[in-house]
Amino acid sequence: MNLLSGILIVVASFILGASLSGIYARKVRFLTDFLDFIAYTEGQIGFYKTEIMPLIEGYSYSCDNEISKFLKKKYIEKVTDRYFPAECKEVEEFIEGISAMDTYSQKGYLSLVRTKTEKALSAAEKNYSVKGGLVRKLIPMLGVVVFIILL
Image (tube, rainbow, N blue to C red; front, side, top):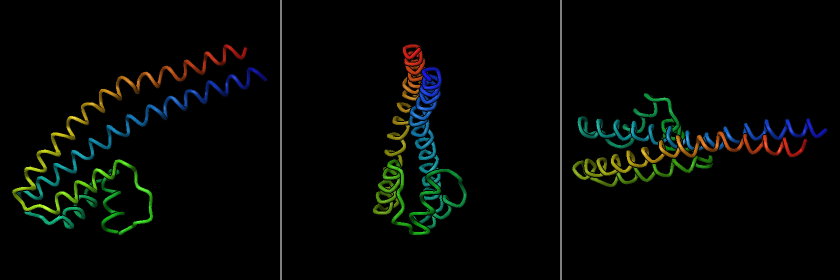
């Protein structure tokens, strides 16, 4: 019985380590997608002077990532009762900021948000490589230690 419970603890610790490490990976993926959305917005505003709703529609139909899915549900399908990830709040604030400005101000705001997001992405990548790696390794080792204690 101790052997079975120990094996279950070790398996659970491997799963927990992988899922907690996935939090860091998800943050990196979100920030990478957000930089892509910022670049798309810069191009549409800088070259075509696109308004915000056609810009959102164009991005949500041309890309397949979490931000495009969020934009499609929130702004096109107008789903309000659905739970969206916390990171999507940044996208909403970005869209509100862009829609309230003229073209000249938008370019400055886009540059500011791009710089801020690049710094956040750099920090998130470092956290993923350091903390994510530690979590992936230490939690399973803790499970093995508990397994050994149970034996």
